[in-house]
Length: 191
Length: 370
Image 1 (spheres, rainbow over the protein chains, first blue to last red):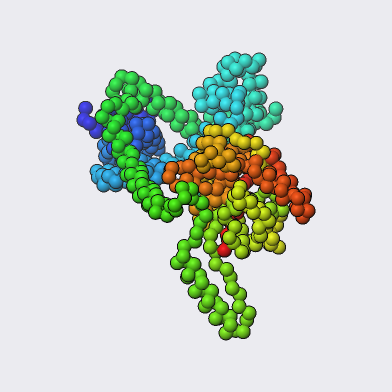
Image 2 (image 1 turned 90 degrees about the vertical axis):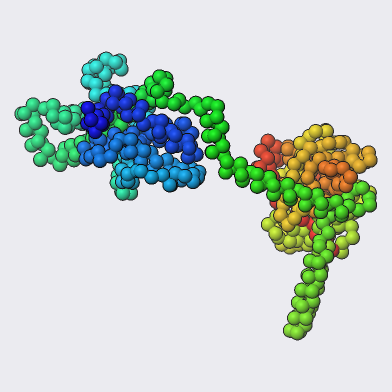
């Protein structure tokens, strides 16, 4: 198999959240990023954060369907990580003299901006669901994220029938939607 | 119950779970009922976001699992750095900080050396140096010159000349009653004709000596100025009994124009050469600290900082606070002051250091004399 085809297969796997594909990309690229971050004023934990964020950017890019691989995965991950780390350094007011001078990367500004917006939205959703408390959190996660059937959920959560569970789920959902749409409007209002 | 059913229908509609008839009926409802339509639009958006959120969460989970797996198998370098790599990493991370620290250490050393040098030649014959701040002669001359110009100026305008008095030295003092009675060292004010006190905000008030007790080195002065507003009460008390060795203490004083905090401990129950009037403390003190209060961390005044031994580094003496009571008792014989009452109760017990100092510092003044 040619390397390009191989990479295409990997990306398709990535889009499906296929663990094998994720593992391969991870294994082939992680050490490179760890070296980058550690040599530029960061720790191994920082490296993990940055690399995983870069992986999410790649994942979102592949899933958006508009992604054309016109460079190697390695180059792309490196470029994104480098940019992310540079931003993080600026936020922390730390300083690294050498990182600006590295070459061989592709422009990724737009992707990162988009990613940051989406990431903030998801973080907000995560917080909103967390703030609902139990049983709402587990109930909604079971129905909307794990997509389990109402009957099954009713049995698991100890409701006497699916209608009771549905009733409870409805109350929880209304609370979540209220939080969600308040923030959503703020987000879009702020651009 | 109705709402729940509608929501249920909306969800089934969005997911395409409806039968054809049901679907047609629902679409018709959507057209005629804008509320239902609005709900469909809104819920579609919400479900999309939920789905994407779910996938994002799942992917994050995968990443986490993969990282743990690979680290366990040793296929990526694990988070722990060993040996030289750690040293290199730490060096890279902290070399700037280390450089700055080195520079600061260098400057501090230089400063301390300068300070020590500036103290040593000034030491007078007696081994105890009174910590009164003599204002620089040159600065004085400059001021006198300025005043002369001022007088000439005023004369030319046929105004009565005002001759401001040059400040000769200053020390520190603190209030012992809310109405403006203050205590300082006798040696700060004994040769002064005019006395001014100045608070931390820079406001200056006229004051006069009420009682001078040279053997005890205690002076009581009273603020006599319309501008001065009495306090309602004092935040600190004055200790009646002696204090124990090793008690932690701090002082506030004016070695410069700004209030300066210093901390230390009580090192001996007696003062210079066994002087039972005073006690020995270890605290940074400079000219200008004379007359300043020595507090413990309960907010009690335990002494009045008075002098410093020039031969031993760090030995400072303070008049014990119980003598303040004696001086006040003598003062009460004067009918004008028979109502003065000292309090041993402190109102700031239990505050942390910063709060404590914040509460107290308004009651400590610069004492200027000429």
